[in-house]
Length: 339
Image 1 (tube, helix red, strand yellow):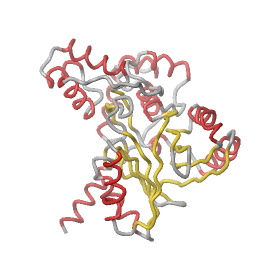
Image 2: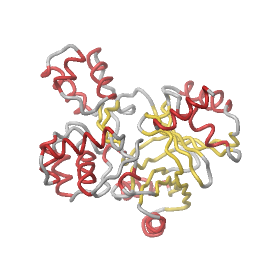
Image 3: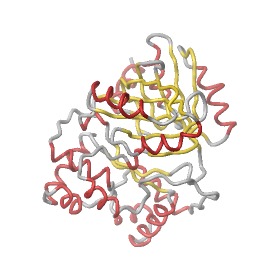
Image 4: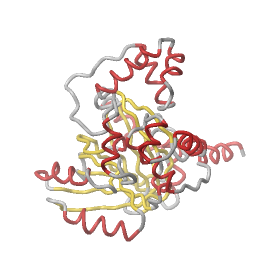
């Protein structure tokens, strides 16, 4: 990502996009009390610099296409940085981060079957040099995800108004017993929106060979079903939240739901999910400073009902987020391989 400095208006524009990723420039302008033209210029600059992007995503659990597992890796000294990029190049990884703490790397991996996961965990991961131990936590219930992250950049009333205009689901719902089938057109629409979540209905229709009204109707149907979700992707550091950390908690099983809901409502929580394995509640947080991290741990995590154990690891580098590898790291890897 190119170096970019943002001011308060930029932060407000990003806040509006987080609340409603497909909001028009006019709607964003109204939310941040600025003109449509100014919002257009600001957003174009932010997107050009790589500070923010909007993507569509198939909800793997709602669509029953895949399941998710968090894999934590403990590595030999110096090995985490070398294996993070090859791991990020897997199609199955949605995010990869290098950490400091009890583990050195964490990845969110999507798998389609137990056999698929078996191959990844038992055959592919062991091929990496320097992996000393692996821990896996399968996601079984999501309480919040980045699709609905609200870091508090805008007043709650404004966020609520913007969210009311969304056709996709920003909050979490239990997955249905049966998945809605996707047609060939649906697949094409989704593929385009995954690449550019703010593409106009006219351009989307042209790419897919249908009328704008058909493109919009089919896309909004997929959104209403929860199959297609929109997400504004921004590194917390861009917003001044310079401490990005992961928490792995052990909660009394009778209190997991209550603890998850409490964390899901907290502004510092980017995502939180109930999991299997050695920890049963896992999440990502973003705060402005070490003192803010201390306050979150002591005042929020420390008072969670049923808390038995808490483990925290601070992210040193984001290698991949929302399915995209950091362009600077891709360039670095390419120059190394060509030397």
